[in-house]
Amino acid sequence: MISPNAQALSKTLTTLTGLPVTCARKPRFTPSRSRRVYGIYNELPAHDTILLRADLSLLASLGGCVAGLTDSLAADRAKISPLDEALRSGIHDVLNVLSTLLSGPERVVFRSLCLDVAYLTGPARSVLNSQAPAQTFEVTIKGYTGGELTIFSEES
Image (cartoon, rainbow, N blue to C red; front, side, top):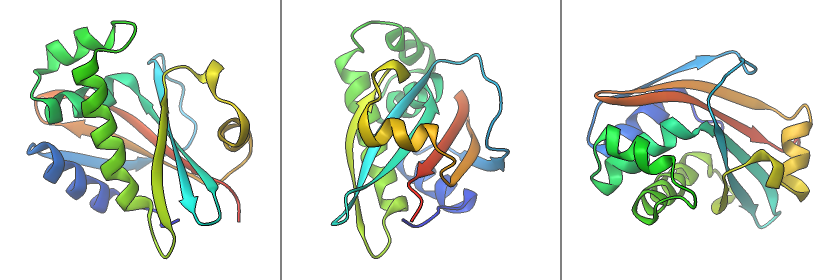
């Protein structure tokens, strides 16, 4: 896995959303009252697991941008269970594009979205509970709600 830097993450998200997005590194563990969701990736062919943890508000904003939703509409739709289909599709698009930042010599593919930590199982749960290498970013989006994004990878 390639470890993305804040500049590459900003550029990729700005290109995807069409809005100015800035990202800054921050300490790994910061308390948050935000609801967090998880993107699960596999690095092929080894099938190592990479886990992306993000504030739901951030992914809803990014997914909403991609789906053409306003920030308030994306926030409202993020509260619906099950997750609104248009918003879910936008979030999946964002998570798929982020896999390009994680790919290096090995290909990384987005596998699934988990909306609750209680449902993380197997390697994804192990990566989250371990002292796996991680990078945390604070993401801001002009006119939309930002939030925190952390990328965890299995130790090699």
